[in-house]
Length: 248
Ligand code: IPE
Ligand code: IPE
Ligand code: MG
Image (cartoon, rainbow, N blue to C red):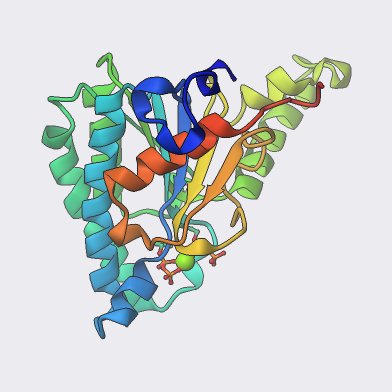
């Protein structure tokens, strides 16, 4: 990349690099953050929610077009009931605030995942946030809640299979574009960069189809400790990567 002609990679700042259009973040490490402090896991989620608010705003400020955050996976229902209850309470509280909170930044809110598992009041808040923000012109913020890449693909397969059964789609017509158009991220570009704080080297079922050529940056920092400078570091690491998309 041309950016290296004048500067060494360690000297780069955000103004020297091309930013990704779409960033995904697996907001991981809340539980470990709380444990280190002798606090209940729910305290880690509360701290993580503050980080989410700060980093979402920062991404919008620096000109990121799409940010997708992984807030709750289809597998997270396996956690103890008190932790799930605390998370649902936090989501509700956040979504009540989000309507006002992201207004000044013109952020568009969308939710990815199977909504049928959520309580009617949480569902109503999700719909209200989407409806209120849909005509804004700022960053699109996707919040993945009860999201799983496999469940998303099953959902897409069922929709397409139904169209085949109805005779509106022929099996040979099914291509990558059609599959993409049946995912929760329909109409959005694939993520360029996926950041996973907390040091785990796995996808944990996040954006499986969409991340085919995403650059992964794994960081040791726990999500509640994640700062703007950590995002900068991930962006600079991303800019150093040579994306080939299967070419040479
Ligand atoms: C991520 O933090 C938040 C959710 C999965 C809801 P964790 O709760 O997974 O934190 P660790 O991985 O146990 O530290
Ligand atoms: C992924 O983290 C899900 C979210 C951050 C919402 P997990 O903590 O659930 O993932 P595993 O269990 O370590 O793979
Ligand atoms: Mg975790």
